[in-house]
Image (cartoon, rainbow, N blue to C red; front, top):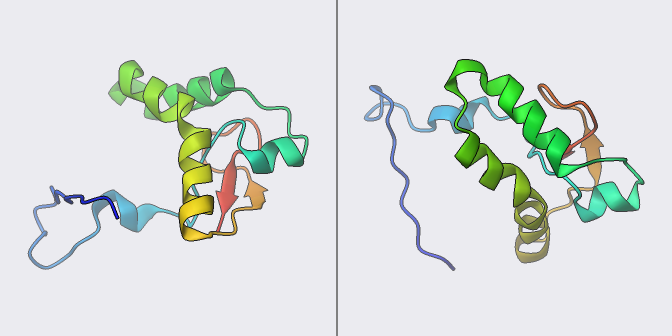
Length: 104
């Protein structure tokens, strides 16, 4: 187990916990994951990067978006391998051009 800290920036942190996580739709985006490769989904990290950049609009941090997108496959596969999550159902989420988001 890797130790971690959760920093809650919500002004309601004392009464409410979750922040952006509460907006999640039980999915996580990734590009070129095993699931996508097995399903022969024509995907690219570059397209995922562009989609994410577009969705962030004026709040975009290209340096952080690059890390998120270029390391997304290994992050999704880590969840599958370490926690045994079934992330084999993929769907379009948000601004995705392709089915990128495994849904748990």
